[in-house]
Length: 172
Length: 465
Image 1: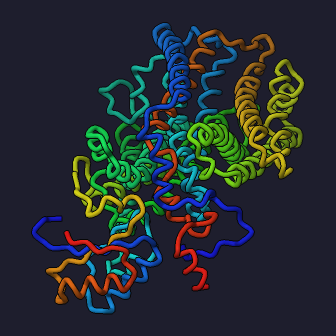
Image 2 (image 1 turned 90 degrees about the vertical axis):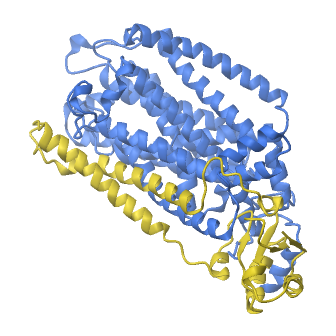
Image 3 (image 1 turned 180 degrees about the vertical axis):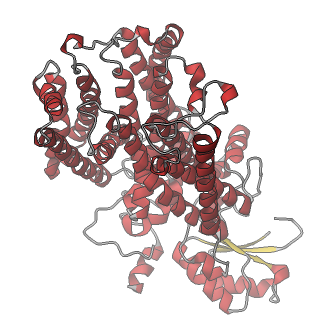
């Protein structure tokens, strides 16, 4: 968060209240930037208007890549580079390769997914964020409204937040 | 939250805790000075670790000739201990992945420590894999590296190679799952930090977590997908371990029932080990309000179910040995039950099949002392199961002149002691420096499962009904 923008922070102390407040505040024509919470709240992201995440698609693609990599490595080594007769089987003994292919798929999915997740959320070691409110990771739910992106003034937004149940309203 | 919880369910969080109480109670042990009990326990585990490390070093230095193996019994305590630890290492991922898919809320208080236990158990298992290779500095030969590195390519048709991939994938994916679960809680400690060091270290590992709704939404998808891929992964690992035996032609090993039977046994022993550790942790860190009798009872029910599956598998094996009409197969099983290793067999039967049936009585499965005792009994039984499968199948082979017995040397025992030292040292470090209960997840299910949830909103949600 850069210090030049003005944020109005509505602090709530209950998950159902903040979820309710999001639609209430939005119905007054106020654009909500983001809501920060100590734990996931179902339906909060769609209530704010965030798009549905495409992480599952990324995961599927990484899984496919893992499967292709594993199968390519196995067939290259077992069929092309150094074929050997093992147990009288074909060189291309696909059923025997299922376990390693499966493990490769899982490995690529997991690492690809987590790395994508970290990149898309700007999570990396050494990222020293200044939290908007230190109580967000404890027990408070903070609705952040960017003044520059809204037509309504500070007083009106403060009033709207208070009336929808905010226990305090801060400016940052 | 909006989920309806049946009124007959017991409370999963007791003591009228608020969200901030959860944070305080769990962070207390990370932020405070280590307690005297912790210091004593940690010192003991370090001593055990040091003695074990000496024995393991000696084994690596001299070679596995220092073990009690002979020409007939070529696998004994090494692989017994390996399978035992890998089995124990199944509970963590099972609790966090399978119970997440089934939306079981009681997982939230116990998944963190169960996953940590999983990772440490798999590391212990890996120590036996390395040791039993004899030349552990050539362990990379098990990886598919080009010929210039040593031998030919690895044989991808071999279950032993499948095992290398299964165990290493399982270890790294479990570690990833566990760490991503930790990130929000590390951010909690970062934001509460009063010292510079704590702010730096927990800040470094919490990766700049903000807790925004967008991040949480993605986080939930990520957890769900990780759980979805970890579930078949956890089943594949012990399936493949069982295939190390089942694809051989040794009577007593060569059976198709092995994969499901091993997986059930793994869950059985893993839950028992989680039970042992949780019963200690909840008392030492005063977490009785989070790890309640309800949790203990649920765990005991899983132990009973999987114990019964294991029992049926034992009987099926015996029946099939007779029904197959294969003389050698029948002999292997009769020899198990009545031969020179009869005591190991009956130890296994008593511990694994009979003792968990006691949990049918509610008074027993809700009794902490009895649960603690039986959880250890189960793990003793599961160790004997692997010993019975491995040693008694080998010690009397096709040629009576080569029949032999196995007796462990101090290095067999010492390497086993090493794994306990490693396990407990890591577990105590975890319990001191990381939150042992997943705070964010507990908070997310507290409404509805917590007794006397102290909020005005508790009233409000009632009026909504």
